[in-house]
Amino acid sequence: MSLLDNLKFMMIAGPCSVESEEQIVGIAKAVKKAGADLLRGGAFKPRTSPYDFQGLKEEGIRLLLEARRESGLPIVTEITGVRELPLFEDVDVIQIGSRNMQNFELLKEVGRMGKPVLLKRGMAATLHEFLMSAEYILAEGNPHVILCERGIRTFDDYTRNTLDLAVIPLLHTMTDLPVIADPSHGTGIASLVPPMALAAAAAGADGLMIEVHDHPDKALTDGEQAVTPDEYAVLVQKVHAVRKAAGL
Ligand code: PEP
Ligand code: MN
Image 1 (cartoon, rainbow, N blue to C red):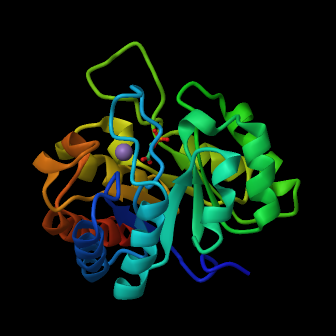
Image 2 (cartoon, protein in one colour; image 1 turned 90 degrees about the horizontal axis):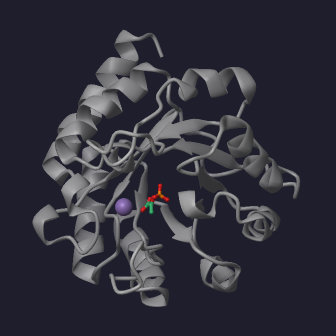
């Protein structure tokens, strides 16, 4: 059994990075009110440049636990290496990011932990590679794996990535694992997040992970792709309407 078993559709929302107590608690309460089921927030951030904000690390995990207490929402946060494992004891869902999708030692370790794992597709990973990475977790006896399509690297750089929505129905023919979409990293542009979220829902996604920030212009990471809590609240209602219209 996992906390996700009773969720028909997983709405995961929160900022790219945990920045302060006020920020994460405020966003947690806002997305909960909007209808989110889980709170996301990065404490350990894998950044392209070593000189960019790397996350609040241990303090970020502590603030997420505080936000969980205040909002009642379970928390999802990314682990970037095996040395961080002891800090994730109280985390509800462990995220493995794109850059670590083939960090096989990390996959085995989180498999042994037995907690739900949100596994993001590598930015150049084939579906076979994606499923084999999930298999590393499953092979440790942990059945609680959620697959996340977050966009792949293609020739066009108009969007941050190319959200590969066809894999949602395709993966459903290949595995019983839930498949969710991340239109925030999938597009990198806030105005594209709601339409692509709706498209993913219509394609049969089992959930959506969306970056939400109360002040996107001041966000320390990924502000350009963050929607506001008000925009998120409108989107949640539309997602339910699309799912209903599609008979899902
Ligand atoms: C994230 O979810 O904050 C993240 C870093 O995503 P990805 O691993 O998909 O780039
Ligand atoms: Mn991000």
